[in-house]
Image 1: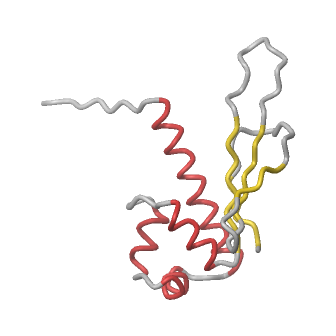
Image 2: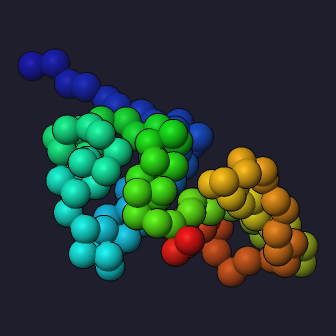
Length: 127
C-alpha cells in the first residue's frame, strides 16, 4: 500500500495561516453585520456558491475579492506586514509597518510605527 507524505514549507504554512485569518475576519464581519452570503453575492454580482467556496477555503480568495467583500460590507481592509520576531536572547523589539488603502483614493498610508503584541493583524474596519 503506497503512503504519501505531504510537506509544507515554512513560507507556505505562513501563507495558509494568514489566508485562514482573512477568511475568519470576513466571516466575523458577516456575522456582526447580520449579512448573508447571498446578500453579499448579490451586491458584488456573483453567485452565492462562489462566495461560499472562497470563504470556506474550497477556492482561493484573491486580494481583489477581499477588497470587493470589504467594500460590500462597508469596511476597509487593513494589512500589517511585520518583521519576524528577534532571535531568542535578544532585546530587539520587532518593527511594525501598517498600511491602509483607502477605497476612494487607492493610496497607501504608513501608520503606527510602534511594535505590536502579536505577529499578524487582519482587520476589516467599519468605513
